[in-house]
Structure formats: C-alpha cells, structure tokens
Length: 433
Image (cartoon, rainbow, N blue to C red; front, side):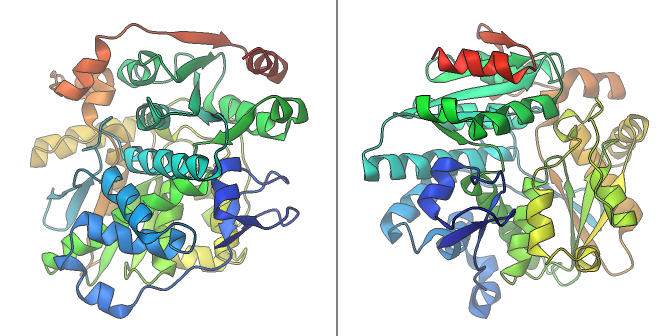
C-alpha cells in the first residue's frame, strides 16, 4: 500500500515508512492511496465471527499487501486478547465498553497493534533503536506506555500536561520505568502536541535519533481502532438491531472517529455518526459554519477530549474530498459543558444503574438528544469510570470501586522529567539522550 501526505508536498511512502516516520516531511498526515471495500459476504456473516477474525479481515485490507498473512494474523491475535461488549443501557441506547484492555481504555488496541507492527519492521530491516514521542491528554499516554513496555529496540517518551490528567491516568505511565520516560510539560495538551510535531521536523534531532509518533497521527495507531466499529456492528446485528444503527464517538484528537469513517468507506453499514465534544467544540463549530478555526484548549472534566486543534481533522477533510457538505452528510455534532456532563452521569446512574465516565456521558447524551424514531444508538464508553474516580465520585456522591488493574498502577512510584513548553528546552533534553 502506498501512502500520501494530506499536505500534498511530500514523497509517497510505503507502509513501513509511514509507520516508522509517523509524520510526513511536509508535516502532513499519511493517508492510504486507496481504501478497499470489503466483500458483502463478510458483512452477511459478520455476527458469527470472533473479534479477532473480524479484526484480521479489516487489518488485511489495510496492511495485507505489506505484511505476510501469518505475521499479520499473529499481530492481530496478540493485540486482541479481550472482547469489548455492547451493554444495554436503555431500549435504544447501548454502550460499547472499550475498557477491557490492560489500561482500561479504548486506545489499548491501537497502541499494542502499533508496537507489534513497528517491532516487526525493525526486526525485518535490522534497524537500531527507534524513539517514540507521544503527546497525551490522558489515555493515550497510558495505552502507549503499556503497549510498548519492554519492547526491544524502542524507547517511549510520553509528554503530558502538568496537573491536567487524572491521578490514576498519570500513574499508568509515570510508574513504569524501563523503556518508558514520562515528560511533565508545564502547559496544555496542545503544547505537548506542538513539541512532538516540532521534534519531527527538526534536522538536528532527526540526525541524532530515529523518531516516530504513537499518537493517532500514526497510521498504525489510528487504523486499528476501526476494528471496534465492525465488532459493534456484529454484536448489534446479532441482536437484530443493526438496520438503523447510529454510533456516537466522544471526540478529542479525532483519531477514533476518523477510523470509524474509514470503516464506513470500506462498506460498514452504519447509518450515521455523531461526534460528541466537550467545551472544546472546534469540530462542532466547523459542522455548523464550514470554517475550521482551532483555538487554545480549555480544561474540562472530560480531559481526554481537551484538544483545541484536533490533528485528525486533516484526515477527515481529505477523506471527504474537502467537502463540508459530504462530511455533514455522515457526521453530526454535539457539545456539552461540564455541568451537562455531570448532570448526564448522575441521570444515567439514577435511571439505569449504569455508570458512565465523563467522555462516555457526552456520547450517551448526544444519542439521547439526537436519535430519531426507529434508530438504535451505540456510544463508545472509552475508559473505565474509575480512571476519573475523583470526578465521578463527586458527581454521584458515592465511591466507585477501583479495578485491580488500576490499583496495581497506583502502588508504583512516580518518575517524570519536568519540562517547559519551550521547544528549545525539549530539543536540548533529547539531544542529551
């Protein structure tokens, strides 16, 4: 498969280059030159397939030309050692629980898949150490750190905004040590993301060390997230509820919903999508006005969505031929304040007994307000609510249980490198490594 840059000024790249480099030379994001439609018989029989079987079929369409079948199958099956159930919340709204991986967040799949694929290419070419730079507003850092922990030939630097991720999220990537280094940036997520992107474009750093990204700007991170949507469709089809299916995606950097839209282009018969935002409503405003106007992010209780300039908007824009009308035909938007998110968490728990995390609450509310007669909705519950324990406990006036997986992280000792948001400081630090 050949990949091109969304900025259109970089040379075409192989899958290996797109994965190892992460970002194109012109600062654009890599896109596959074509998206293969999956055969109708796959969708006719999808409800009878396992998560792994579904995921391998999808992965083969993206990566099968470049990775031998046995190797790709091993990567997929190693990545997906768990299922993601669809749980009924109301008669018309279901939660796709994406928190059954090692860090209890949806990004576990993309991070683990990328770690295994990157390792495959490094071994194949006999290359030296690769240094992964990843900016996080919460769950990306923990998923990437744990997905890459102990992987030979790869060192990970997790950049996160000081004081703006939950304490449990912070534990999941600052207590690991080994080949994982946490960098605590005195700024917001957008500052972390800017440091990563500037590092990729810096000639001195690239001469000093081999750099790549594990953010959703990397094709190996965001494309595997499409597996979820095929699996959700399969589960809902098994229940006889897939004919008028609407999927709502809590959205921050837009890698997740971007992968869903790739799935739709491959033939996945989901009727439409809703992108749910918190107060960082840049995409919502784009849908209303046709103007994409990034701005500094603001801090909310749904912190993983605190993104003021979502990178993957460039992919969505490219995927739909830069047509506002075409984008709006498949996606609608919603935006919620902290007060509305808290109100929704409380309401859902009171009326159904289901506990949403702040991000999932945005998804539930958007479906509650946006479904029309005959439609059934699935929202993505992107992380276990205990990862936001202080927030959820305060809203519900009760103490939710912390799963054993999270308790284990909390016993570790924090190790982090303090960093300003000045690129010169970050560059100096990396050059010393």
